[in-house]
Length: 206
Image 1 (tube, rainbow, N blue to C red):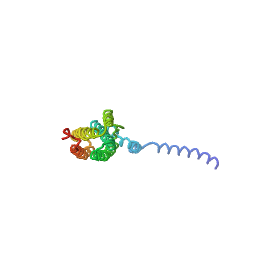
Image 2 (tube, rainbow, N blue to C red):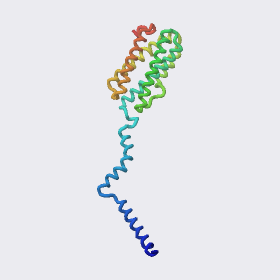
Image 3 (tube, helix red, strand yellow):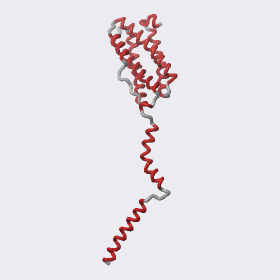
Image 4 (cartoon, one colour):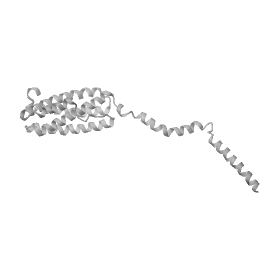
C-alpha cells in the first residue's frame, strides 16, 4: 500500500499540473472576449477623458478672451463703484455707485461660476490701465470727483462694455456664455441710461 501511495502521489501531481496548464490556455473562441473583458475597465477612464476636453481647451479662444475681458471690466466697475460709494458728495451719485457695486458683483459671481465650469482661469485684478484709471479717479474730490465718475465710469466705460457684449453676443460659440451675455446686456444698458440722466453727465452724457 505504501509503495502504491508513493507512486500515486507523483501521478496525481502531474495530472494536476496538466489540468492547470490546460485551463491556463485560452480557448480559440474566448481569446478576444477575455482580452476585451480585461481591457474594458482600463479603457473606460481614457474614453471619458477624451469625451471631456481638457479644461483649457473647452472653449474657443475668442470665447475665453471675452470671459477674461468681461471679468476685468466687472472688477473695474465694482472697484470704481466702491470708491464712489464712499467718496462721492452727491447723494444721487452715491446711490448710483452702490447700485453698480451690487449688480456688477452679482454678474461677476455668475461669470466666475461659468468660468470655473468651462476651465477658464480669470485674472485676479483688472489690467494695469484700469487700475491706473481708478487711481486717477481717487485723486479727485468733491464735485470734480462726482462728474468724472459719472462720465468716465457710468457713461464711457459702460458704452465700451455694451459694444464688447454686443459684438461677443454675435460671435461666441458656447450656449451658456451666450445666455450670460443676453442676460447681462440689458443691465449694462440700464446703467448707461441711468448715468446719462444724472446732472453730472453734462453734455457728454446727453
